[in-house]
Length: 220
Image (cartoon, rainbow, N blue to C red; front, top):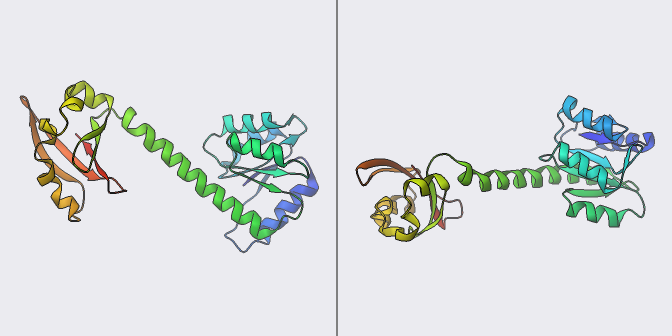
C-alpha cells in the first residue's frame, strides 16, 4: 500500500489500523507529498494507493488526476476529512475506486475497502484488456452467436475475408457450424480444432465457447 498523506497523525492512524487488521497483512509505504508519492510509485511498486487529496504541493481533483495519469491500472482509495464527501464522490466519477473518512477509521473497514478496491480494479483492467484484444490482435479473430452468425470480425479477419460479415453462416469458415460445434455444446474441452478451405487456401480454425455460453470465439 502506498499512502500519500501529509499529516503524520493520520499516517500513524492508517499504519496502526492496518497492523491491527485480521486480514492478510499489507506492507505500507508512506509519502508526505504528491511528488514523493509519484517517486514512490516507481520505487515501491504498490498494489493499491491511499490518497489524501489535500497535500502541500497539490490539492483537490488535480491531485487525483496526476496520480491516475502516473498509475492508471492501480486502484486509488481516497482518505477524506469532514466535509469532503462531495469532492470524494466527484473523484470516484473520475476514476477513484472508493473513499474512507479518516474520522472513525477501523481496521476491518480499511482492510475490506482495500481488498474490494483491488478486486474491482482487477476486473476493470481485465475488461479493458479483453475489450482491446480482438481489435489489436494481428491474427484473424471473430466472435459468433450460438448459431454461428458473426457478431464481431476483427480487422485482421476482415482483411482476409471481406465477405464474411455479409455471408454469415454461408461463409466457408462457418460451414457446418451446428454440427462442428456440437461437441462443445455437450461439454467437450475446448478448443475445437478443424481445417476449413476458403478458396485455394486451408486454414486451421480454433473454436472456444464464450464464458457466458452465448457464443463462440474463433481464431485462425
